[in-house]
Image (cartoon, rainbow, N blue to C red; front, side, top):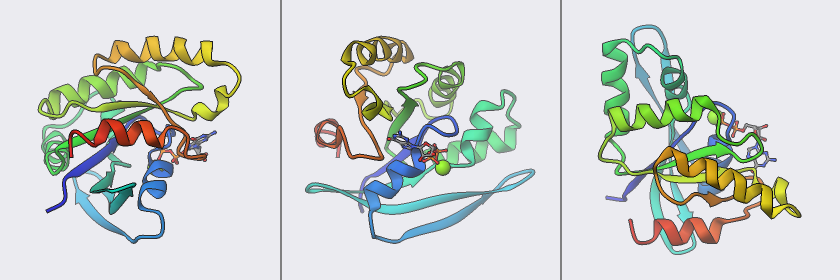
Length: 173
Ligand code: GDP
Ligand code: MG
């Protein structure tokens, strides 16, 4: 069985864009995780990054539960179940925004529901900093406050940083 990596982060950080880049033309499987109020779609596909192959999950939907503050017990159980399908996680933030309070919330949520996962933090949309690396260093300093180690600068849109992402994933998978 392929190892499995879940993409986590608040809405709009670029989880789906990274998912699409990683699976490229391969097909995504959509499955539902019913909870108390809504049916949340989770997309799963086979990612290929150079010679690495792994299952990738786009956690859209869980993001709302993660950032809405109070989570019902049954919803929490559902989240834990989805998270526990994965051994690894990529935690996206928006480099242009910097560290947002909701990012800290996602970090707390990960520690609570998936303490076994130590995510790789990526600063997405970093292509916006092409000629301003000092600003990106400042974002990295903030991102370290999440407590998950050294962040990587990527762009799901342009492919910037995919070699760095590969280097971080390779020893894990
Ligand atoms: P999600 O809500 O986390 O799944 O985020 P999406 O993948 O839907 O992306 C949210 C918005 O950010 C969209 O308008 C994307 O086009 C944009 N976006 C995603 N990745 C990048 C990136 O690397 N650079 C830039 N500039 N925009 C991006
Ligand atoms: Mg999405």
